[in-house]
Image (cartoon, rainbow, N blue to C red; front, side):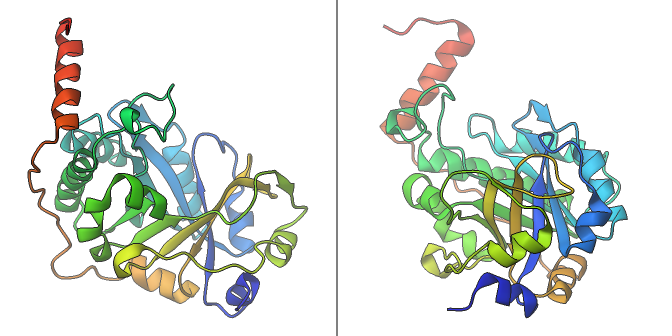
Amino acid sequence: MTTTIELLKNNLYTLGISCSKYNPIIDYPFLKSQGVEFLITKATQGNYIVDPKLVLHTEGGYNAGQIVGAYHWLDPSINGVTQAKWFLKAMGTVKHYDFICVDVEQNWIDWSKPRDDPLNSYSPNQIDDCVNYFLLTTNAAIKEKWNVIYTRTSFINEWCRPMLTWLPDYPVWLAHFPYKWGVVNCASWDEFKSKFPTTFNSPTLPAGSGWKLWQFTADKFVVPGYTGGCEANFFNGSVKDLRDFFEGSMPADPVVVPPVPAELTDHDRIDRLERTAKTNGWTLL
């Protein structure tokens, strides 16, 4: 088994970060000098949040010479087209970016209840329809840039197996964290790269899907030039591969997944009825 540090040294993986408003101060030129070649920042969530650091992080990364992406957190309670329009409006304020992402990891309905409770979860068809409508709208509006799917293997297997029918057609940004909980302070990026990550297998997805980006840690490592716990990522390839992929030409016909109306399950019908009742102030007996 090849260690990750060897893969970095041999230019087979490329290091990057992801960030949001929770990382308000980032020394972009310093990170670039330490081999951090790309940056992905949060843009929006649902139809109710625009990350206040969106413009700062995208421009900072671009000016430092990094490949820059921006992502949207998908909320299955809101129509995918509505969310796409919210995201596109926010991205209209950004001057420079190389690709976009949609974060598909929310299955839960109520944030105050257990997230792994099936009674507190949207149906697989609801989630799948939502992301399909989002992709259909953003693909049509931003044809010249890749649309990347952020998700987890466990999420797909447990909460949204319909995604397996089309996921291999998209670049995948996979969340897969092999570390135990606990914060590690690193005095330098050299220390981080030499000691962490240690040897572990790269992640895989069902149905033959691979990964283009891999978020291998979230908030665990504290490193210079980045406020808060560092969300570190790999690109599956060299720096040249990274730039060729995200700065190169898109396929002649960008992938568009037309949503297919799914037959409603009893859970879907009850969920929609409860939402309609709540919206209209009805009381269900």
